[in-house]
Length: 528
RNA sequence: GGGUCUAUGGCGCAGCCAGGUAGCGCACCGGACUUUUAAUCCGGUUGUCGUGGGUCCGAAUCCCACUAGACCCGCCA
Image 1 (spheres, chains in turn red, cyan):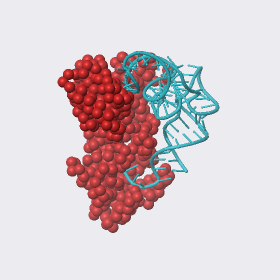
Image 2 (cartoon, chains in turn blue, brown):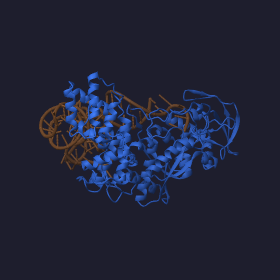
Image 3 (cartoon, protein in one colour):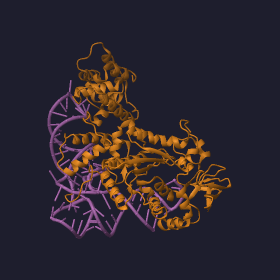
Image 4 (tube, chains in turn green, brown):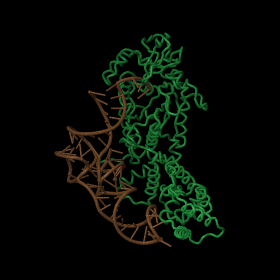
């Protein structure tokens, strides 16, 4: 690393921003405002990967600002995207809206103006909760207001050249025959069924015919309508192979990250941007998809979505930011079970940042500190927060289901983990508690009990209910079992099953007094 | 057909992108505590970093080739 220069805060984000700046300088472009873009996608439930695209773009914006340039993040919702599949958990009534742009489909939950806005707002809400600032734009307004009209015009005039290039670059021959523009059929409101076959350049209109089309594995009926669409104001959209390019040129975008699944589209769009629209394409970075634990791509229409909202039930917003900023390369299998280690890793980074943990390697020290700053959106706290190991919290939360916050807090004070009950710890207990409830729901164990065991349980319940606190609960249990010819070993097992739902657990005497002996007595009596 | 990623103790992974003492969790072993088990705490063992070359004072890390697996694209977005 000696001959390697280190940029900014030493993370991949800084390196990327540096590359971007070098490129812009060599292109000789105006550097007054460097726009970065993130696409949102409004047809499926936005998962952590969609969030990642925007969060990382925002990171680049921060890095650019840190280098002294003005930058802004455009969050672009493609709400003219047609609905192709009904996502898991959505009503089948959506069937009639298949192939329609998502912004023209009513919100099945009735809380937003359209299906598309419902989906987008889930993502925007996630971004808001993480403190990401953005400028929101949407496809519907973009096309309606004719913001892309010049680019569409140029693209359609060059459509045969583009069609040939697409065929050459990615082997798709479709656009040698049809225009890379999908009008929304003015008669039935459907996209994709209307095939554009001629561009009337003087009038800026495309002629189309609405016919049956295969979307996914489904046949969508067209309405046979013959129509013309005005590209300056009617609804319709460019095919993806050329749409990015039009947007980049129109919005003056200098950076956009992309997932590897759309690599080919980006390749084509870069060419269109450079050669047809005469706008040097934005700088890119490619990232791998997040996979679920089985190695499958997280799909918006499958049930394996991890949304930001779901994540934040268990982990802090910073744990997501850490996940997304720690690296960008490499395929990653991701699940909610990764939250505990990320929560702890954040604490470790904070300790490094505040010098509580020594790191010898200077480059690594810089990088860790830099990462911590990015996770805090380059506005790190002045004081370290109070650290409590997340796994410990989960263990404690498993024990206390009632009055959880209060009881776990008391334990933490007893253990000397914290000195005072703080509101921020309450929040942590809440998160860890949710985690414990979600992942520790052991299937109701069939408890194997004979009559003598029940008798002993009854005796124990009575003892626990007595006004006088038994001196030594552990010993009391042992004695009761022994004097009634029940193996203490088996009896302990039964108690763990009743109290914790497992066949083993922490030492039972203290456990019972922690939970409250009357509470335990009550629980036990339900089994007698 | 095109492309990308992955390969690191028994298992699951981090470290690689900007080279400098190979790390973590689980498992395992020992100890402490325990009137049982477990939990907890302390300590410990476990590695030719997929194969072969190259660059370098120095490679898990960078470059090239190869092998195996996974995924994406070749509908649409």
